[in-house]
Amino acid sequence: MIGNYTRYPVCLTRGEGSYVWDAEGNKYLDLFPGWGCGLIGHCPPRVVKAVQDQVAELIHVPNTWYTESQGRLAKALSERTTFDLRRNPRSLPVYGEAGGASHNRTAELSHKATINASVIFLGSADGRIVAT
Image (cartoon, rainbow, N blue to C red):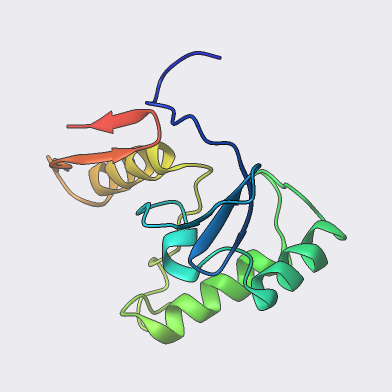
């Protein structure tokens, strides 16, 4: 395996809430800051159920197709943020496959929406793409 990250000599086998266990049964408090689990913990029952339900229907659909869940998410975003289709029909959500895609799409849309626009991402890194 390519060493693109520092790897620790621990093989994690399961997680629950804020804790993870290794192959030898040692329990660790997971203080790693990223990729979802830092916010919701490992394997919360409600999220596990939602994922199981979703993968029983569709696992992955590229943005070249419509899905009901995209529409529900857009509606929820418009109800909870200043993003509002009723007041601004041109205000549409942008779904990307990864963080880098969201950077690229934001820059493209900003350029199309304004004259001589520049978008600068300072100190921003998503996945393997670093926008500067």
